[in-house]
Length: 97
Image 1 (cartoon, rainbow, N blue to C red):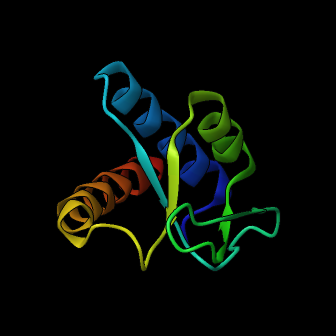
Image 2: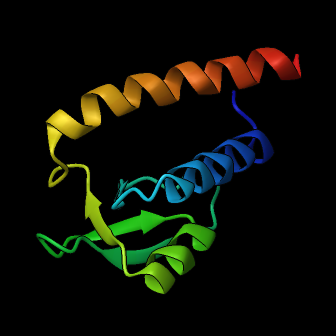
């Protein structure tokens, strides 16, 4: 299993890369709290309660990013990004072993 530390390190690095590129960010989050410390917010489109990493919620509020649930996320945007992120996470895991 991917440790919390490795996940957090990757996620923060990835977010920083996207911010440096000037990306207009939409944060997509889900309904499961894997680490037991998620914050609850609501999807900006449908209003359903969603769970988000505490540091990511602070960043989203600070930068006025849209936060949506998995159901409201644009699948065309997600498909390629999920594949890229899984590949990068896999590389990160291999480096830590």
